[in-house]
Amino acid sequence: MASLFASGLLAAPLIATGTASAAPSETDLVLAVYQEETGVDSTRLTCDPAAGEHRAAQAACGEIEAADGDFTQLAGTEPQVCTFDYRPVTVVAFGSWRGTPVQYVEEFANRCVMEQETGAVFSF
Image 1 (cartoon, helix red, strand yellow):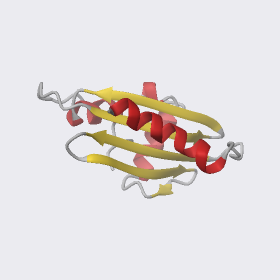
Image 2: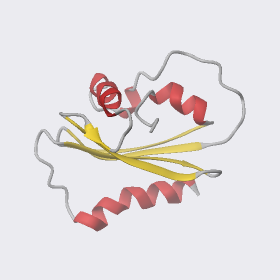
Image 3: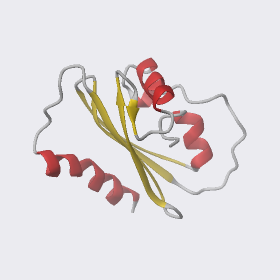
Image 4: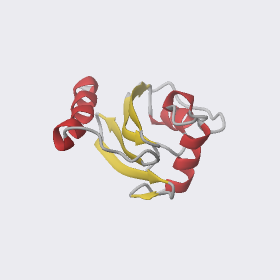
């Protein structure tokens, strides 16, 4: 189910717009979190200046900036104790970071682990 979710979200911008036409410095991202119990939650994030529907847009943009737009390098939060509950959470980011296309999908064991690994970026 999570892979179908991710495939659908990643295909959506191609269907909606055809081709990417981002300005060289434009940052416009759609972020989504999927968990079986709660379904899909998504938001839009723009940076430079930080804006969009993300409740912590400034923090999220700062964390993505610190990772130079590489979602696999997000610093996350301070280590915390997470349970061993297996309640998979899939996160997806797509759009553009300073004009560079972004497509990121990752699954975490549970929401606590997701927040620890991704910080404010997927906490909306």
